[in-house]
Length: 144
Image (cartoon, rainbow, N blue to C red; front, side, top):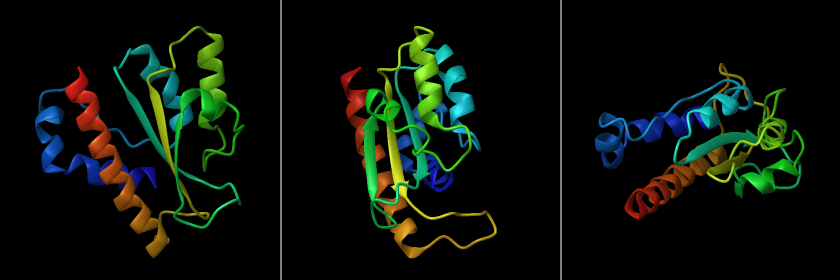
């Protein structure tokens, strides 16, 4: 789900000025947990993570929005990958890195492989998350 959101965000007209000016970096990572420590090292003003989640607690397409401290308690559940975001955040916190600038959007989904077609529920949720992140970025940029 994160790949789809990143792709759509990178094509939004409203974000092009920020992207061109180097004030907004959009990356799609296969293992966001691994990259998180690098992103924290660069001291970005805001880090937004988006991934598919599998909690078995909600319907496909359900959207979660969590802050870093809330993510740590979820163990490995908030990632579709083996090395999750939660352990990486816990490690960053132990290392004394500031994790307060991290926000996570998760979309409840099912196992997805690149060769599979994404479900209508997931596509609808991706569109909602893109709109939410676009609005969030607007508020963050205006507050700077």
